[in-house]
Image (cartoon, rainbow, N blue to C red; front, side, top):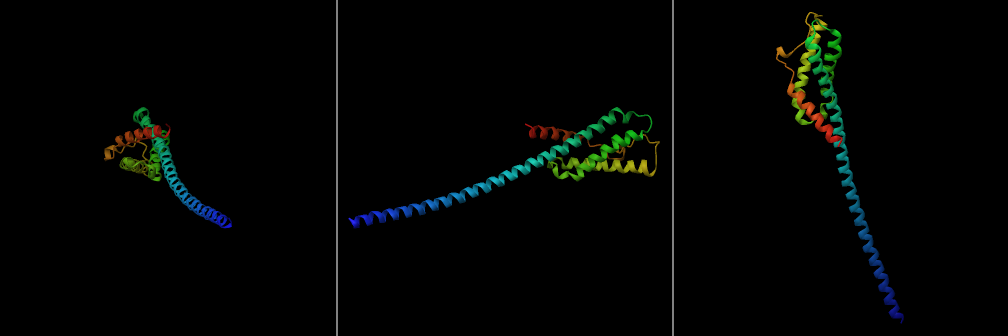
Length: 180
């Protein structure tokens, strides 16, 4: 009987030991798999978060450009193109300020622009660079107040209307996708 007990106990210990080894092996394998899944999930979450932040910053940039484009557009239609005499306050506070603000935004935060707007942004920057240069030359250097309005279209730098259209459309599209 003692021999039988030894075999039972011996096989029981071996079985328990083997079971423990197998359980330990699968436990470690599961831990490695869980760590791998967690790393992958964290990487995907980080990429998604970065993309969301970029979109949020893009919508903020496009929104500012949208409002300043509207401001200058309304200014030209309602006041600027109808003035009889040079109005330094209106030109400085509305036209100059918005033109400079749009140009500065596009230069400083152009990395937030979607690729399809980069060429249009360059056209806007070029137009505003030329307008601001002519403004500075006319108003500050020459101190010309006889010229009632600064236009650069006749100089070959018409306002890029397609750029305005594309920026406004992209803003509305991205705003809706961000907030729905």
